[in-house]
Image 1 (cartoon, rainbow, N blue to C red):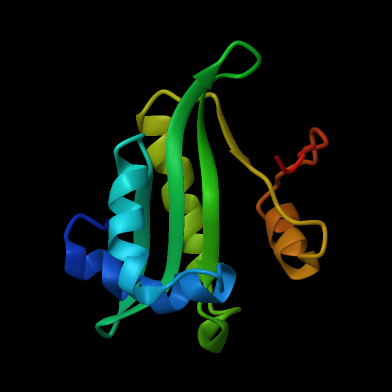
Image 2 (image 1 turned 180 degrees about the vertical axis):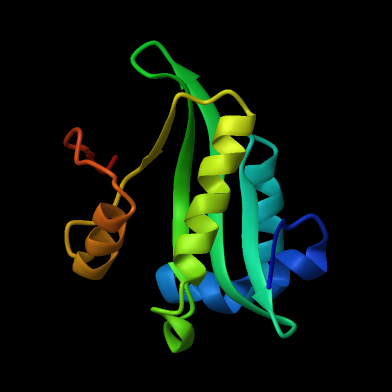
Amino acid sequence: MSIQLAETDEQILNCFSTMFQLRPHLQRDEFVDRIHQQMNSGYQLAFVETENRVVAVAGFRLSECLAKGKFLYIDDLVVDELVRSQSYGEKLFQWLMEYATQHDCQQLELDSGVQRFDAHRFYFRQRMSITSYHFSRKL
């Protein structure tokens, strides 16, 4: 098992089938370009690979604001449904925490849809807290 940042188009594309389980609106033929576009603003894609197969993916970025200081924000975090509960998510989460620490972040942040009960149980097991409401409005 290895955890690494996706740097090549091939590595990015290999993350698609797992990411699609979280983001089913994505199109395979647009995925690499969309990731590159987001990378231009600091997005990074980390993945867990085992037996030449991507089994977990996290899209994240480093950011900074007055309220929190420097932090790592997780945009996307998903484990392939065929291998959930085999510690891949936990190992990727630990990798993200170490990455954040190495980059002088004070916090790790994410938003999670209110309907994602299984994900919430996972986040609580990782000792995360619900610290705010997230509001949005379509424009």
